[in-house]
Image 1 (cartoon, rainbow over the protein chains, first blue to last red):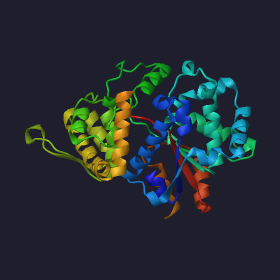
Image 2: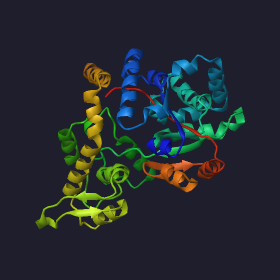
Image 3: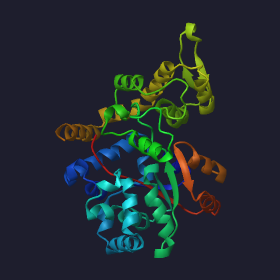
Amino acid sequence: MRDLIEAGIEFRVYLASWHAWINKKLGGNMDKIKEAAEHFKHAFIACGIPKEKVRFIEPEEEYKEISYWEKVLAVSKELTIARALRTVEIMGRKQADALHVSDLIYTPMQVADIFQFDIDICQLGMDQRKANVVAREIGEKIGFWKPICVHTHLLQGLATPPIWPLPSDPTAQKEVLASIKMSKSKPDTCIFIYDSPEEIKRKMSNAFCPAKETKFNPVLDIAKNIVFREKEVFEIKRAERFGGDLQFESYESLEKAFADGKLHPADLKLATADVLIDVLTPVREYFEKNEDAKWTLEMMNKFAITR
Amino acid sequence: MDVETRMELIKRAPTEEIIGEEELRQKLENEEKLVAYNGFEPSGN
């Protein structure tokens, strides 16, 4: 998001509370979902999204327009039930879990959103690509345009995969990989932006990080997608007897050293944790100092306990 | 900011794939005003 904004692209953040409601998030309780939306706004700002440069969109202002629902129907008319079912992975669900008609309306609504909000570029996670591909395929046909899709990587979860080594069959492998993304419903698989330094250290030191493994390695994944975004040089402290400190100027050089066994997983984990702590310190401070943000975080923690 | 720099910003990690990269470059070259979005389901911890 920050990169697109820096590149001079106008950015809108959609707080998809109606989608959360369909997807039964927070027990499908709209009051709680609205609280979560406020919390999310704070989270984006805390992470350095410039407040004056993004527009937060809430469904109520857009969905009261009949033209929106016309778009939902226009999309639905181009989408077979079979294909709509295949897109339910954008809800983080399997086809067999799509039991209600509302589950099939989710994708048409998401595609209609793109045209309702005048979006040229859909920057969403890789898990959302099926909806964006539908938008590209049918956009022009229903009188709109072909949006560009910029799909972002989803961080690998920190836990050990249920099957290791990963199955070689591509379909089976895809299934295992999809099941081990960072997920906030499994707190030990992910780093929360407001985790304390101790929590970050604990989670990172327990993270799955087999020596020399570079393909599926959540710690290297963080190094690639976060550390080298934030740091020109990644410094890894190491005792003299283990070879002394290391410095890497690119992800590729780090990956190579790790693959060659010149860098021990424990040292990589610790150094990565240190960078995460450094990057997330202002975020945690924002949630401590901003009373409104702090309150939304307390509400979220309360919702988690009473769930 | 020139088109190449803007493209590099858009392509850097965590971007994993761009569908319609040439269309994007064309729009940047034409200096079109572009709007992007990301959407999230507000949910709990």
